[in-house]
Length: 116
Image (cartoon, one colour):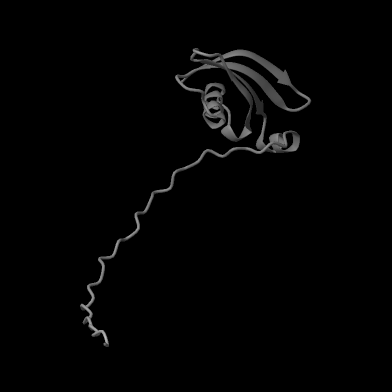
């Protein structure tokens, strides 16, 4: 995933940088993937990055991303009330233990004779 910053504005009132970037990827990146890519290219903490929108054109592998990078996590929490999406860490999957079926003693069949 290749990231190119096209425009950057500083907003001192809200203690943030407003970023416009282009991400080149085969499929549409998720907000978490876009936040990781922008945080890596801007050398910022991923928790202070908020992705506003991801725009793509049909047939194109370039996606326009609008993001905000706050000076701190506290500034983000004070200004931006949207929920932050934590990157998911996959926990190791434990397979359930399968017990061998217990063998039961065969039941005696009782035949009843029809009464005439």
